[in-house]
View 1 (spheres, rainbow, N blue to C red):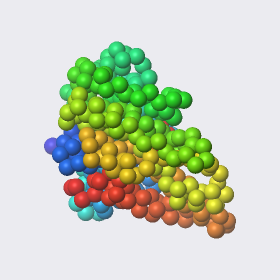
View 2 (cartoon, protein in one colour):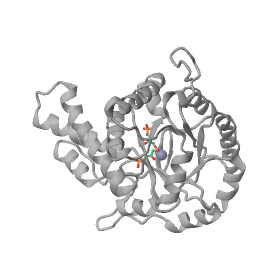
View 3 (tube, rainbow, N blue to C red):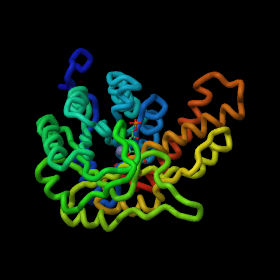
Length: 332
Ligand code: G3H
Ligand code: 13P
Ligand code: ZN
């Protein structure tokens, strides 16, 4: 029988209706697609993610960053996750949902998430020396696995901002390290650095220059060393020009933005890449639609009237990602 969750401090994700990522990745690996990992910080984002993934019959990883926990309150976010599961049941046949900590930076944060109902955590010690990264990741795995929670580690550093850690330049993952890392830590999946980066300004391009291709050679070399092991891509927003144009048209100022071309992500999703992280594209959609409403209806002051259209557009964008980018639509 499921535990009563309302009065206990520690709760298993199983009682909240989440799943870990193990079976998700197995299916993704077998069938050549990636599971989308979408970040949320508020109600409209989680509603849109769940609605889109249920409509397109896609498994989904709901990601919560440390910043999201600080912003929205850890307890509230966890219950929003649970609320989303209940909402989905009312909407029809549920799809598998994992609740995942994005860029956990300490053992204590990972433990707190595991204890409060997360089914999966990332420990990101990629900015530390290899041995320290291994030791911390292993410590998280040793706490997570007896609770059947899956763990994502990271090797290599992405440019851009990962919560409080920011790097000017990316340091590609060295394929020579991946086998030892996976063996020594027992992690369930591995984020690698092959040229993606966080945020809406991924590349500094001079006029006429185009986005440099992802380093598929590094991805292939990693795959050879850890065959069948799930690989994760962070920083995978495409920074869609339609929304950048809308933002700029309606009073915003976002110049020199660039993202990862969708066809490169599609190619990656067909390989051992089993999880693709997208946050910035959702932020851009919300900003664009809210700006549009404000510009067209300057007297509007009911949040439902500007958050509603943003939520509707988010559903479309996530469905599009599932169908055309990560290839997860129709898989469950
Ligand atoms: O990789 C970072 C994610 O986009 C989360 O961003 O730390 O601002 O919530 P955040
Ligand atoms: P983007 O900034 O490209 O959306 O990346 C999100 C991410 O990697 C979350 O961990
Ligand atoms: Zn990330």
